[in-house]
Length: 309
Image (cartoon, rainbow, N blue to C red; front, side, top):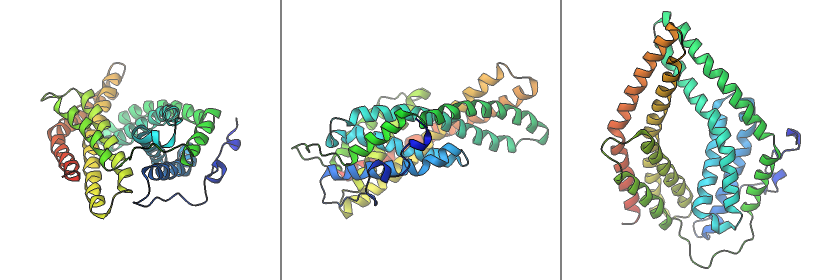
C-alpha cells in the first residue's frame, strides 16, 4: 500500500467532523469512546511531523497518543467490545517502532547538551560519538517509516476508529471510572512495597510504567468526575506526572550510561575519554533520582487515597 492510500484525516476514517464529547453524567462507555476519538485524532495530527522528522516532539506526541489508547483499552476495553484486545496488541506493535526512534531522540538530544558544556578541545570527539547514534537513529527511522506506510498500520487506524463508534452491548454492571482508579493505584503501591532499599534499575523502570498507567487512567476518569472529585483527580495527575519525570530521568541516565559502556569497548582514545566523562555524569544523575523518587511516590499515594477518603 502506498502512503497516498493511507487514511490521513478523521473524515477518511469515518470519524465525525468534530471530536466526540462526553459529559460527566454520561455512561462510562461514552467517556472511553470519546477518549479513543481524541487520541486517534492526535495520532493523525502528529503523523506528518513524525514522518518528516523535522521536530522530534511530533513523534513524541504521536507515541503519547498511542500509549493513552493502549492504557484505555487495557483498563476499560470491555466497554467497547471484543475487538479491544487485538487492537491494543497492534498498538503495541506500532509503539515499538515509535519507541525505538524516540529513545534515540532523547539520547542524542541529551548528549548534545552535555557535550556542549565540555571544553572546546573535547567537543570534536563528542560530536564523533554522537554521530554514531545519529546513524543508528536513521536506520530506526527508516523502519518506522516503513511501518507507517504499511497496510498493517492502515488497518490499525481503521480498527481504532471502529471502536470509537462501536455498537457493542454495554455490560450490565455499572462501571465507575473514578472508582476504577483504585486498581492501578493498588498495583503501583504493591510494586513500591515489594522493592528493596536499593532497587534494581529494571524495577524502577517497571514502577514508572505502573505510574504512567495510573496517570492515563486518571486522565480518563477526570472527564467523568464531578467538580470536587475532578479537582482531586487533577492533583493526582500532577503527582503522577512528577513521579514519571523523576523515574524517567533515572531510566534515561541508566540507558545513557549503558550506551557509553558500549562505546568504550570500541572507541578510540579521545572518544573513549569523552564517553567516560559522560558515563560518570549519567551515574550521578541516576543517583540523584534514586535519592528523591520516594518523595514523589508519597505525593502520588496521598493524592490517590484522597479520592476515596
